[in-house]
Each structure stands twice: as structure tokens, then as C-alpha cells.
Amino acid sequence: MQLLDIGVNLGHESFQPDLDAVLQRAAEHGVGRMIVTGASREGSAHALALAKAHPGLLWATAGVHPHHAIDYDDATDALLRELARDPFVRAVGETGLDYNRNYSPREVQLQVFERQLQIAVDLQLPLFLHQRDAHQDFLALLRRYRDKVPAAVVHCFTDTAEALRDYLALDCHIGITGWICDERRGGHLRELVREIPADRLMIETDAPYLLPRTIRPQPKHRRNEPMYLRHICEEIARDRGETTDVTAANSTATAEAFFRLS
Image (tube, rainbow, N blue to C red):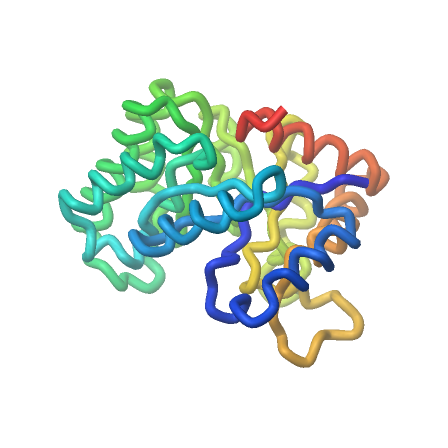
């Protein structure tokens, strides 16, 4: 079984002491490739540096998360364009809207999201998208650009059936994380994951966040790692009524095509 984790935050400080061990454990659990998420100016540059340090294992995205939209300026835009031209960068993002926390004003989030949509259009790269509690505004803006970019994935999907169908209607890919293992908040995903076509479903850990609650025993440090992607794959397979091997093969092939890795 070979798995591809489409969303890992390996630049997070919690991975600094033991990154090599984290990558080794991932390999031992069948996770052979990973996409390192860029979510800020500094984070995107770091994601690219990590990818270059581990060719064939890691690739990167370049973008600014809506939490950091307030810091976005012309210099940021120029840097993201420079980073995104590197062959190790395979998507623009993490970008989108987050009205749950509103760390950046909503009008600023919208402006910054649109600027990054334009980068994807200009460089013809896929989009790695974030949306929380902002579906209508997010959808309205995405609709204006969707047919101008090669592909788009709604990363860490946790929303409603209506939102899922809206994204599938726009020919978007859907990223499912260990949120599906959370009986308090993610139970609805166990039904919805059956609606995602095999060639639109990708899987991710979003490590070090979203440690699956169904892992036994739970690690004392509570840090999510790429090695737990196999557990997420097994849960999704059961919910979809298919074998783990089928879910693994399909999601990996879909991710390879999306990020142009095959």
C-alpha cells in the first residue's frame, strides 16, 4: 500500500526535533509521498525548502492562509509568484476564507483570496483551498475563477452535504482528514464520504493538527503525524464500503494526477 498525504504542516515547530523520525515512521506505514502546506510567507518558503531537502518524498504548496491575510502585501504577492514557479511547488494555497476565527477582517480575506486565485490563473497551477463558516462568499468567488485554473481541492472538508455538492458541481476535489474520526463533530462525514467520486477524493492528515480520535492507544503527545494517514484511509474505506487497498489506490492515483506527480 502506497499512500500520498496531500496536506502536512511539516514546517510546524513540533516537528523540528524529530522530523527525520517522523518521515521514517510515515514510510513504515505506507506513506511514501507528502505535500507540505505553505500557509504564510515564511511558511511557504520553508515548505519549499523542506521539499528540496527531500526530493521524491516531499513537494510543497505556496500560499497565505486567511488567518494571515492581514499581512498580505505586494511583496508577499511577488514572493508567492516566485515560489510558485519552482517545480517543487505543485499548488497555490493554502488560501481561502475563514469566518470562524476572523483573525483577518473579512473584506481583507476576500481581497487576498482573489489575489491568490489570480496567481493560480497566471501560473496555471491547482488551488489548495481552505473554507470555514464562509461557504457562500467562498463559493461565489471560486465560481468566477474555477474554469480558469486546472484543478482545485477543498482541503480538510468538514462542511455540509449542500456544500459538498456545490464543490463537486464545480469539479473540485475534496480532501478528507481525521476529522471524519471525530464522533463529536465529524460523524456526518461518514455518510457524505460515500458521495465523493473516487477520482475526486484525496486524503490527508493536516498534521500536526486533527489527530484521529479513533486511534488506540492515543499518543501521549497528542501530535498528529503523517503515519496516521493509513488509519484515516482505513476509516474512509469502511465508510465507503470498499477495501482499504481500493481506497488507498484510488486516492493515491487521484492525488498523483492532481499534483502532476505521475
